[in-house]
Length: 426
Image (cartoon, rainbow, N blue to C red; front, top):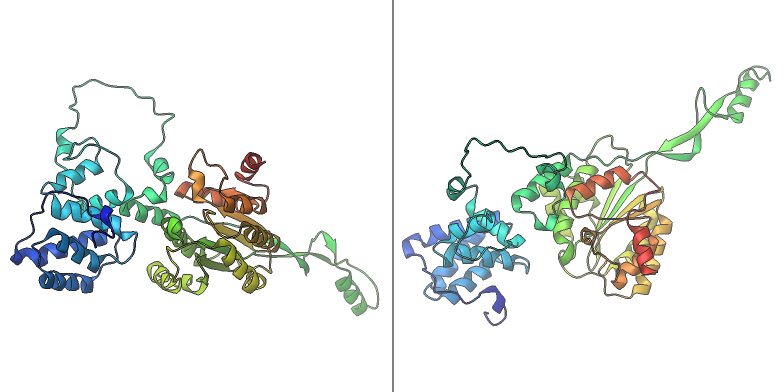
């Protein structure tokens, strides 16, 4: 197994394996840390891991690593987190100091200071579990009575900095905080004028039919002119969310937000339809109707079998345009397309399906997490095929970007970054 994934188990000094009386306790604590770091581990897996280690023995570090790896890792994206937690918990006697060094860069640990990756940050946070380092108090500057005046008028508050933080770089606690903020966020929409008319006392248009009916009841004498105005109706919101490997972290947070929009009362949307796509298209609308967000996303994840897999944007849009377009886009729906546009299929098919989608929708808004980079350029073939056929092109990587979406979703004149990027393509 070590030859298959050589990068997951770097060569380090031999580990001090636990004594047999404490084996079950240590594996249980290790499993709790993995769960806090984001791995779906329950009591059943813990019991299986203890039994497997007892059967395989724990005298070899290679066997011990891969036995736990087989019990706790079920997806490729879990390998990095498992490796970090394993290395910190089992291999290094000073793992707590090392974790504090990653969580607080000002404190020196057993390794050189460097920026922690998202997996390392979540692993360290899971093992610390709310503990505060004692060194933090020791290194705090002493108050010598000198007053320092700081002009903070141009600085950004902590909450504003958090809102601009990338979803991919958030720790487990930060992700939970971002979800709570998005639950309170509203997504308002303006009503659409219908072709049908309704009676209004002081409407802008005369209602000739009603006026003539009233006149027939009064012997043919037209006394008062009835007035009418167009009825107002609310559009549908249709969301197409990419759940491929490169979009998984963003999709989880955005679907959490869409669950809140689906269950909001009096927000104006007639209906909210949600679809996920990776290698195939999946309708998860009925799952988002559940009141409990965890149960809703769990059932949606079970329905979408291609979660964190490959990407076939053109084929999935073809399925949507063929099977669902007339059902959900017939009343002037607003479409949110959430994807990074990295597609390796035929760009001509993708362009054709994007053109059909734009013509069928009232407004097509594309949220792309890649716009978080200042030097982003539409170099990928998929992005070049999709960009001309959207009404607005915006980032979708942070709480601030979702707040901006709520502000512009009812502005037909907003194009986001589309004009600038089209100029780069020409």
